[in-house]
View 1 (cartoon, rainbow, N blue to C red):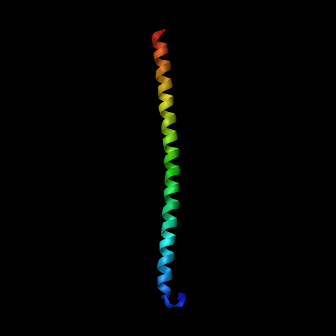
View 2: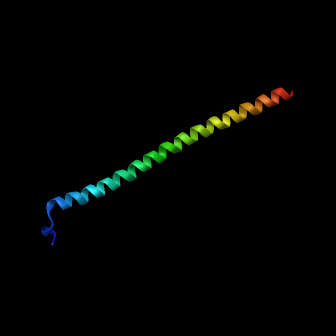
View 3: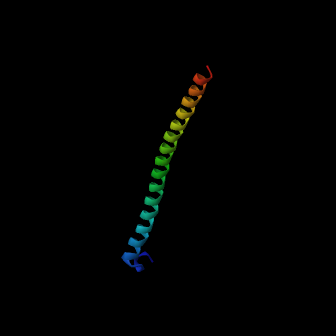
Length: 61
């Protein structure tokens, strides 16, 4: 039964499996990159909030 299928059909199946693997791998890498970017932007936002808070405290004195 295995030998009745043409050899190129196996290549197609392997290509589909490889494509799915690469899709998942790329999605994971992009998710990790997005998480790093979001964390960095969150730090910038927190720093701005702290600077504004300090500025308002200085202004109130």
